[in-house]
Image (cartoon, rainbow, N blue to C red; front, top):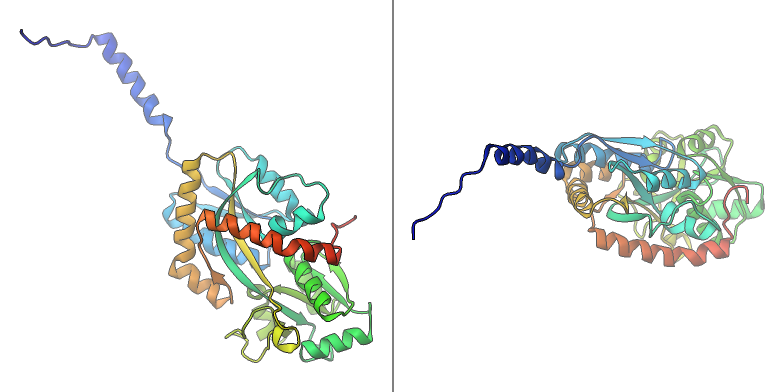
Length: 328
């Protein structure tokens, strides 16, 4: 039986040609424009150092620029709400111990749901918490500070980046362990708080190491303890909190990437791969190490499990310390 060759008509060819461009655009390249990485705190803290280090490296391989946008306010809730509602497919956020493991337990109602509205992408970094005082305070270590604070109950102030921030949590944790009473003064970000601490308006604070090291080395702040389990190489003369009479004490901040849950899975998977590549790369690792921070780069599943562990860890501490949102 002879074969039959069917030739498409001119109309069929035109229809096929018209369909091809549509098919090409059905799966557009992502990202198709710069990515906006929202940091829910004011400039000048550890969060910005981590965000800018990773964003700069991601931009080299993901195909678009990644720019950092600081959006402080309401213990990070303003930024979290904005990103949860973002529908441009190019806005993500820097998750943090405060917004993910503290706020759900200090606010009776949040404008976002940490589990429903976001998808964990990767844990980027862990940052040691340092305890510092103004250099004019007549104490040289934690033991002396606790004794001095107990001799003046309620007369000393410590600052933080805001209610429910990592610095707030860290100092309340120390207060519980030591039994001292110092007054909390919340700020809108680490930067303005450090300005007042160095001017002497505040007496103490706990902040992530990257934001503090330059001021400690310049003598503008005195570090009296680290929240790590071992002494830091960058501060070999400063003992840990645990070594100064509080065994088992540990306080570390952490930061990770979150994407809105509405993002396509393929986009989240690509972001995860690129963020892990950046976090594990030598540039970010060396940059964070120089600032006394640890680069991590976990999988999305590992980060999700880590968040749940941290929530379980801090929920009872928050309840015992009676940490409440500002204005409550």
